[in-house]
Image (cartoon, rainbow over all chains, first blue to last red):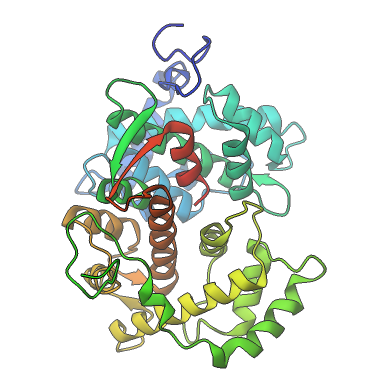
Length: 196
Length: 196
């Protein structure tokens, strides 16, 4: 397969390059986003986790689901906060917005009765369908972490997608030869794991 | 310094072996714990994150602080859930209890006015005082992640301590020669990061 194309067969140990996210329409939704964002970002043009939570809640992107928790918003900030300021600018917000729309569509595909939850196994299927190549053990660990009373809620689903993307991204940045292996020093490992 | 002793000078890249946690008194608190635990664990003798939250709230271990959030309880389970069942038995609960008491004492030392919060820089000092040897950049990343409105709350402080211990533990288990470097495959990295 081509480099990182999630639709092609990839050798074990490889991981996607997020091309799944770039195909979502975003141009049409740019204008209202800008107003949500600027109304809250204020002077410095950046939002922190609390501001992001208000911004996303006001935008109604969660639809009929419960608005995102602060914890999930923190993970969103961490995913895109490459300069480690704990805040997010408008370009990062747009990137997040596109990803959120994709994840929401994906979730709704599984949540056909609009209960706000999907079966844990469907979380696993969704992850696989996004192009991540993970062992059954890794999928099981993820499911355990992101299910509550035997169900996966929208907020946790998104938190899971955000985090999976963020840690995969952190790994990829260090795996310059794209071989699926990275030698981590302890301090760098802590930076990767604790900031997300 | 001796192997892993956090009080001795250690070369950069080393990390503590948790001797800081073994010194806390626990014998006196064993009996009430057992009753909190069994009242909630029920038939299978294990608790999941929701049950752990109820258990800890009823025990009153949070004292005058707000009870632990479900999110923090999930991280607690993940820290000790070495068999990946998503649940925690009594021995693991005892281990958690001892650690929580230590972290609480530590927090109260910084929170002298009992406001329920400490300064972000104090979170950094607390981490260092526990014996973790981290770069300023790693500490900054941690502080960013675990502060809210410029303060670090007790719940987040504990979540941070739990997670730092868990990821350090995961790293150490793989660093068999204790050299401060681990070669991670992608799937294993995802298991480490996503289950915590």
